[in-house]
Length: 560
Image 1: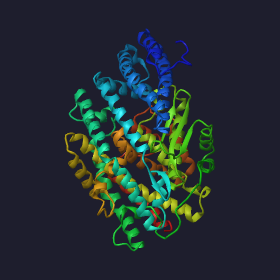
Image 2: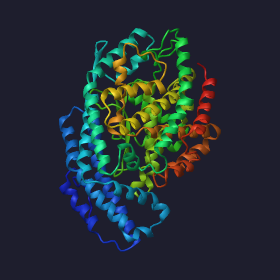
Image 3: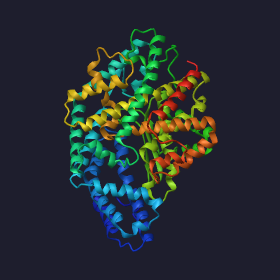
Image 4: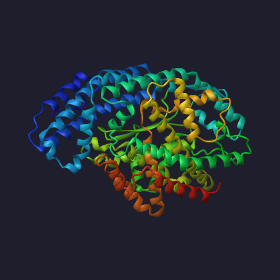
């Protein structure tokens, strides 16, 4: 195959001949098939990174029309052709007589996933996928443009977060109202976007022969190792085990604050009147401190993190026009992770930095796998890589804090784990209902959201803010751009808690297990990846109970 370096992969006319060569190539042995897969992977990595960087550029500046047009041009004119050609390439691989002569342990996951992709592919779903991507981009654009005037300055939604942590209750309430009013301005348009997405996704499912999108996406996401019944078991376990502890914590907060009822602006500040945790003042300070933390945890992980400080791999500050959220993206051609986030100086920003670094470590560990497809693991395990880092760095928070404040940060994080598991169950149950009842009305959707809030939510008093509560799900990016990507966080949190308990027992062994599992990338089925790290793969009550009991015990030991 001729060199493709310098090729303009934003133009289908430039890359189509290369893909045609892969389609036309004669394969006369298992060895030739392996070589074909490796070469195709390298070319896919080059093209994929081109598309990924167009997405990165768009999220870094949602207001630049040239950047937006470049991204949408790729979505509209290149991605559909890649989907069609990808189906033909999958068929060539799966139907090749030499595929049965490949090492079945090594190629089992790839063959399994490829056969499922072939079964699901429908030509008529390509334009529907393009339309869904464009709707997701519009949602990002709306959210990226949100800003408010507060205390005499224009501020992003992310920058407003710090005002919910101050001790002055009037300031917190004012900040909450200001942000809520701004978000509510776009509530109807965001509802309309979501309704269009639901209809398009239902059509995708029906085109592929499925009754509903829930059942379709489980297969499309290659969820061979757990079912929607397992998700229901997770939801039930969270309701029975996590929600009571979360509400205990909330009630204790209400009593400490001497309040008749807990309001939405009463959750973020310190109940003892201490100043908000402020781990850093600028992103350079955050990066330097994070580097020191990782070097103390593991010299290897420290060196991995420092490799990101090259001027091209980090975009961390919050600014107007930048898309919300955070992510890590592996650039498979240049073999360099990229981390995106919106840091404003909060403890949650430090947690995000450590979280996304964990994803980067996973990418670096798996980078030596020859098959590009295997350098990405199932999302349920990718999140183990990141969530584990949030907990394994507890002992090194003194890089940012005094001992007292480090304990506060750990307490907040552990309490947050309990509440995030409840939120994960809420979002997961919401999506199961949404997509098994695709013809629901907007009112029914809002009512279902309130019902789930009562089932999994805190003791918050929403009186006077009922309309805002109806649409509070709209801030969850995953519902729009990554449907059904949320239970993964719950599964992974159970894995991360197990890794944390391992680390408390034997740090060296835990780090060895972490590295061993991450080096496998996605080359093994999900339960085997957990097993490689000596973790149980289970979503039910027995696992959840033991882990939440450990969290409860640790909270009892920590000073308030």
